[in-house]
Length: 96
Image (tube, rainbow, N blue to C red; front, side, top):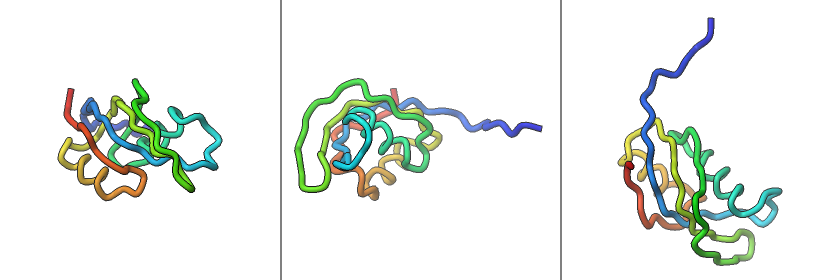
């Protein structure tokens, strides 16, 4: 018997600065999507636009606008973003 997820999905639009490690095997867009997708409550993240780059010693901070398929509320998602070391700054985060 297959287990299915019955939790409603919440589409969220965000503009955030994401730390993408230099040793990533992906381009910056894919690296940002992977970092966002790893956060609890995020089912899928799709980067729509790269808006800025800030190279650092161990990571590049890339500002992206992305659509997130979330299983938690926007307020909970904001808390997860704020406590994540992958997220440098939150510019915008709201349900679409």
